[in-house]
Length: 227
Image (cartoon, rainbow, N blue to C red; front, side, top):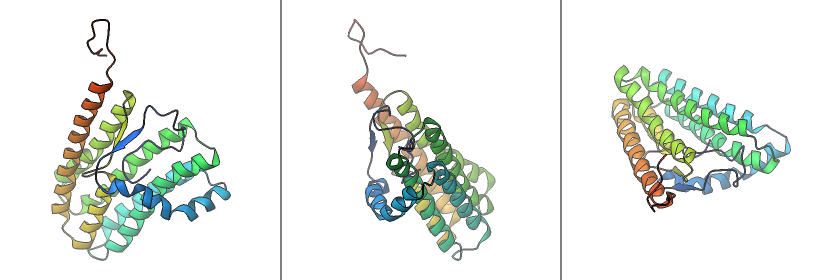
C-alpha cells in the first residue's frame, strides 16, 4: 500500500506487472522521498524476516485506528492520533512492497492482499466521518473515494500502464482527513473528498482512454481492435 492507489511490488517483479505506472501531479510525487525516509525501517524489517503480508495487515489496523480516532475524539484532539496513524498506514503501504522485493518474497497472493488492504484501509479511515456527517454524505464519500482505484485497476487489467496520483488520490485523502480532525470542519472536507475523488476518477479515465487509443492493436483493416 503506498502514497496513493497502486499495485504492490510486494508480489510481482516489475517484469510481471502489465505495464509501468504513470502518475499525475500531486502528493504522489513525494513517494520516492517518503520511501527514502523509511530506509532504516525497511532494512530492519528485512533482517528480521517480517512478512510483507503482515505489513499489509498492519496498514489496515493503522487505518482502522485512524478511523476510530476520527469518530470518537473531538477536534482538534483527534488531529495528533489521526495524523500519526495515517502516516503509519502510508508507511506500511510503502514498506510491504519494498520489503517483499528485497527479501525475495513476492507472491501473487500478496498482490491480492495488497489491493484488498488498500481498499479496506481507505474505507476504514473514511468511515470515521459517519460520526460527524449525514449518512448519505458519508456513503457518497466512501463510494467516490473508491472510484480512482477501480479505474486504475481496470486500466492495469486491460494491459495499460497503472495510473496513480491526484488531484485527490490516497495521500491527498489522508491529508484532508487529518485537516478535518484538526479543524472539525467535517462536512466541508467530506464534500472536498467526494468531489475531488470523482474528478480524479474521471481524469484517470480520460488518461486511460488516451493510453488505450495509443496502444490499441490494429486488425487487418488497420482499425483498432475492440474487445
